[in-house]
Each structure stands twice: as C-alpha cells, then as structure tokens.
Length: 270
Figure 1 (spheres, rainbow, N blue to C red):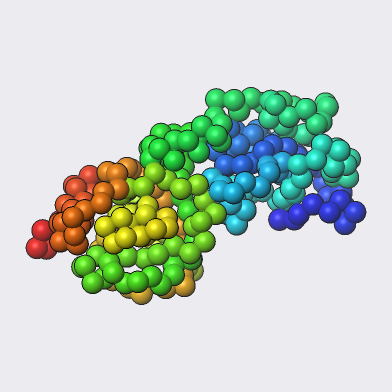
Figure 2 (cartoon, helix red, strand yellow):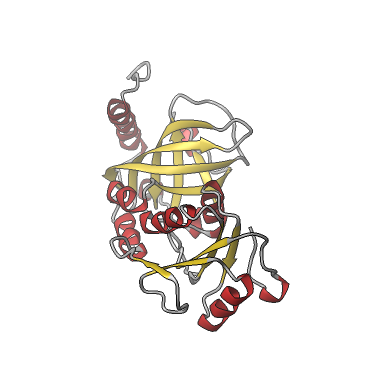
C-alpha cells in the first residue's frame, strides 16, 4: 500500500489496472468496481478521491485492511482533479476504471455505482437501521478499534463490557442496544457474538457517546487488543431507566432475547 507523492512514485512493472473512486464507505458499489478490475488479471491500484469528514463509515486504518483483503496492490489518495490526472500519467495504467460521476479522466471504463451511496448508508446507521446498511455495504457495519479500560460498572452489574478506543472516528449508530459480533485480531482470529450498547448512558448520567460490548460466553481479559465489532441487528432504543435495578433487569432480558435470536443456549440462571 502506498500514499500519493507522484514525484516519488514510479510506473509499476507489468500491466496495471487503476480504479479511481470516492472510497468513502467501502460499499457494494466499490466492490463492483474492484471486481471489474480483477477481471483484467493485472495488478490493481486504487486512487481514493474521498475527502476527510468528521465521522466516517470506514476510517483509513479500516479501509486499508478491507482493500488489502481484496488483494489490492497499491493505494493512493488524491482529491484534486489536476493531481489525479498527474497520478494517471505517472502510473500509466493499462486500464482505468472510474465511477459514473467522476470526470477527471478521459478514455476510462465507466461503471455506475449510483444504486448505493455513502450518505444514504450514513443516514441508515444514524437511524439504527443496521440491517438495511448491511444490504448496502455488502458487509455488516463495523468498527475496528482497541479495547480500553472503562469504569467497570458493567462488571459490577454482572455484565462485564469492553470499551472501544478510537471508535469516535466512525459514524455513530443510533443510541440503543444491538446484536453484534466481535472479531479478536490475533494469529488465529476468534469471533464471538456480543450485545452492543451504543449511546449516552442516561441511567448512569453519562454525557458522551460511547460504544460498549458484552461478549456472550466469554470471560477473558482482552484489554489493549485490536478487535472489529460488527453491528448485526438493532434490538431497542436507549432508555433512561429509573435506577440500576431496572437497568439490570432489562439487560438480562436483552441477553435472553439475543440468545433466542442467535439460537444460543440461555445462560444458567436466566
């Protein structure tokens, strides 16, 4: 993977297919462009024209991982049209593939991705409609982050949760409780189901948006580990309960409901 400094970039050996698009969200439309590129049988370079926003569907560190998993050989980032043209001239690709609304390059193969848009997906997530967002993304909406230490209140209540560090780069799902899955990044990655609480925690007088996850059937300490947390299904909105006892009762019911949806054995004592 590389970044853009055209004075330092040399033409690659062998044929190259260049894909130019606003890779803001890594959604189905983008995957279609990449599949078209793969058909050429060449090395693939991506020129990402996306502009930095306050909150993203796919921040750079996450986007890089997704592109690498697709087999992309080179990554460049540039939003200025003149610099895009300079990049194409420098790379001298055998083929150029662009999205329909991009007009910076002539003599390119044009493919429409208008059936999917990042702003539409962003709105779905902000409304808590993560299932609909999955259909547009081609994958569950996910946050890749590091597990950090919190106030350990969940542990005291019988529901030990992990806190996500770095999740503030992502678009915030609507405050509420979600069924999710959690992937622990290690030599042999492991995946677990989880209950995700996203929001402001009004019952405990929280004032900032946080994402926490209670991992089902899991007791290990994974502080400072890198994980990917995926939002699979919205269960309910955030509620300001009348005290911790009411909150705990609802958390117990959330777990019962989640296990029923997932086909998991109920926890002993439920």
